[in-house]
Image (tube, rainbow, N blue to C red; front, side, top):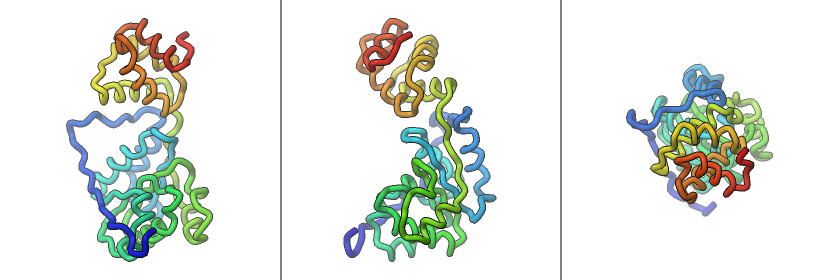
Amino acid sequence: MTPTGAQLFLDFPRIDPDQRPLIKTGPYVAAVGALQRWKHWPGLQLALVGAPFAGKTRLLRMWASDANAALVTGEALAHAAMGEIAQLSVSALAIDDADHPEAAVGLLAALNLCRERNAAVLLSGRTDPAGWFANPPDLRSRLAAMPVARIEEPDDETIAFRLREECVLRHLILPDESVAYLSSRMERSWTTVGRVADQIERTPGRAESLRSARAVLLGLGMDPG
């Protein structure tokens, strides 16, 4: 961090009613339910955890819109001046990638601010917050006591939904049979969904037939079944 710190910019997300609907299948049920009950969180704080590409940022933005919260990233806190964090005027705060390896001091300042203001705070990270930082000790103990909502590993239904979403973002429309074929045979991870969608773009036929869909899996070294 520089002596003065970088200027901290706040985002105030607003959800477009015309955007694609939020997926609420198995792996997301508990997390979405916890976010909707935010006024009843113990200490008005919660950590949302999930593997990379599980959809944490989208859920954070949904909550920030619902709670009229400001949104910052752990990286931004890592480079912000402590005085600026302490003087933020927020009624609620969402911190994406709060487990950024350099964010500890800034994160503690943000948590102190929210406690003083009685402001709700939502953090996101890849693992349970108890293991994010060894120091400062006060931060470690507070994170260890923080309630956690988890995005679970994807099931078949969610893999299919997410694959459709990723393809739509790339302006690709897959037939139902191709989605069913790919989602039942691809590796089960959030990261793989994006890899498959990228491979569809590169594959002749763009998975519009089962033959092309098979070529997508072969191109990624996966068993086409």
